[in-house]
Length: 274
Ligand SMILES: C[S@@+](CC[C@H](N)C(=O)[O-])C[C@H]1O[C@@H](n2cnc3c(N)ncnc32)[C@H](O)[C@@H]1O
Image: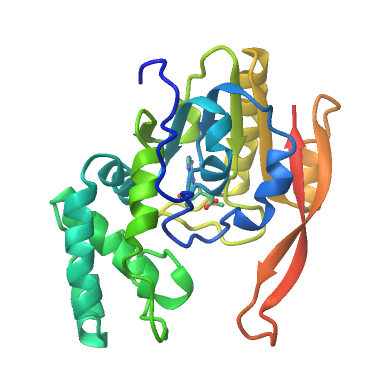
């Protein structure tokens, strides 16, 4: 990516184009309070639905987004580069949606056309049970269909806004361990949480990887980066980040539970900074 400002030409305010377990929409304001107003190099290595990136975009000069979910990363690249073709295929999915159609599309595990693969990914995300992303040991998506009256399979305005925001953004597949940061960097890390859902890909995010992340964060900090990490409020995470170089803040985060009458509850989380 050249040192150009990120695009400011959104037709509407871009928001995450998928539902994602652990999505940070509910706490984005609290995270943004701790981000500088102007960021030369912004990194989000656990991208998921990208809620913080989309909310912070006006503050960012350069953005480097990555995730270890290869299909998800491909979807971002297709939105960046092939938006018209993507919208055309999503429109077909929208018009054809039914139970049989869902399971037929779900069975197409090996699409090699990136645009068709991305349209399938978004279609399944919008119509599957709770927007869950779960794969079997062969990396095949296996979530059943959800029951929605009118799923938002194609939100063209938002997809076009995301397309604009993603221009000049560096989007990479890869694990956080491989990230080399530039000078003047801010890194927001939102890993799979301790003691909660941790199977976004075939490989689980176990505690040995939480430890590797803590060590990597210390390395980035030694290189001059400012780092913010979200995680669950567990004894293990407090112990992992007990070194006084870290500042730990408790925050209350909304938790959406469909079986409750108002569908909402809250939970304690941590923001860890250095
Ligand atoms: C809690 S979610 C991020 C949610 C995101 N902040 C949002 O607003 O939607 C965690 C993400 O980390 C990714 N992930 C898991 N292991 C990873 C690794 N080793 N390196 C990079 N990303 C990883 C998962 O694929 C998942 O998208």
